[in-house]
Length: 181
Image (cartoon, one colour):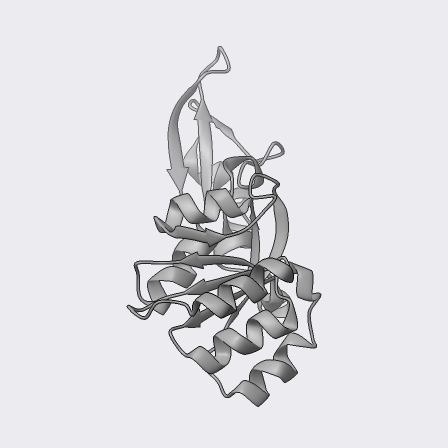
């Protein structure tokens, strides 16, 4: 879970990563899908929060693959226009303003999906990250302990592990609890 929600400082680009389908994002956000296609396909997307000028946005977009960008644009028409012009994969609007009908048509032509989130920008960005499917969160190789092990003896292993929680197993291999750091 840390790699998704709290990436290492050397991998901060991971904090922008969304591994999800657009439908999963829309459900998590309780968003209205204004336009879009291929909504069920899980994608590896990069989120950009566009609290910036149009020029700064254009510069930021050049740093990422446009067809993998999720741009959270708020209700600023100039930034919405720039996102569609750039051909981002998903544009998420927040706020109460409706998206211009002409812009929706241009988005369809450029295959830009538009979602409207009922939440503010901060909540929207956090929820987008939470739309990841559980299969990306589950570790198959993990450190576990037996319920009859002495805490003092396992403490160094737990302390030196990158994991923060550890399954505790009984003699039959069933999980009987969780040990947390």
